Length: 405
Image (cartoon, rainbow, N blue to C red; front, side, top):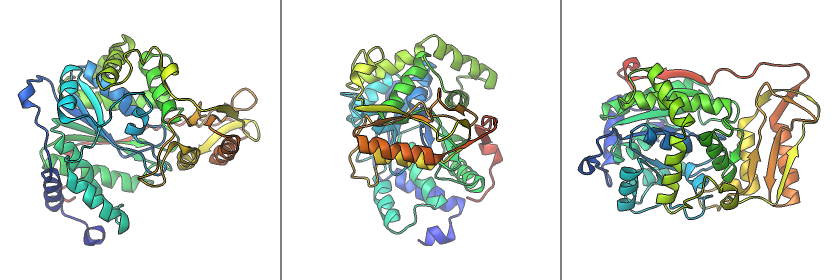
């Protein structure tokens, strides 16, 4: 609580981060002769944020090693591991040997935090939770970075969300957090860039677990790519490529990203990762057979025709929780088949031919409650309005840093 009220200097925050990193295993990839940069990205959490499922195989196809250690969802934000749990057989908690082998052979592995990877973080987070000190920038910084440093990375790109669906709901808080993350990471020896990105509406047009996996596969195969998600994936991928010296600049990075998405190389890596970690070998081709589905799937129509002018994104996330697709408490179980899809974006015209969303529910009562929640989360006006164009708010690099944390 003293840290919460008094803050920390940069040196203090680096010392805490280093101590938490060293509280358990620290992965070392040098013995594998990877001959490629070990990279990762981390998001502060949002709604419809399935970017990790796309970025890991994309960067692996580009020649990086991506040992991505992800988390589960809590509250209105979804978790990458919960999405992968929707895939039958996929092992989100493999042993260290399998994790290293898949990373070496496939180039990417998305797994959960093992018991001995930065174990101090688990202990301290429990204390922060019960003392109402979660929203402390130095403690958030040490928590995030200790796990990334323990993964033995060469470079990291942070996706710091800002908006009504983000943990950082103001630009000031998001910038302060991003600057601290970059400054402390660099001070601890990890090359890091942060992008502050928009979360004033869902990132993808799906929110849930199986529905977001399906959305990610459609993105990788080119069947459908949500524009906001595509812009974010490209921006994060380019920064990761530059960080790993796999691209010399933005233009070259953009060409690499487009090539690997268009020629199917990224989708192929995703398929191989799923199979290597216990999932079906033909998952991409037959995902509709493998992914769980809800009994009730139906449109949510707006109360009046018009144009979407605002989305209460946090309420969309909470709607998924109420359907059973998220958690109120860490011990809650999750139904992977429920959620929302075909979510309308700001600027979309909605009416008889275009719903606000499709609800995926188990029961009639749950479907009706979700319909009401979705309608309440959308503001529809009578006149056209512009689509949101501000996806990337700001970029923070080491060169921008001040000496205080």
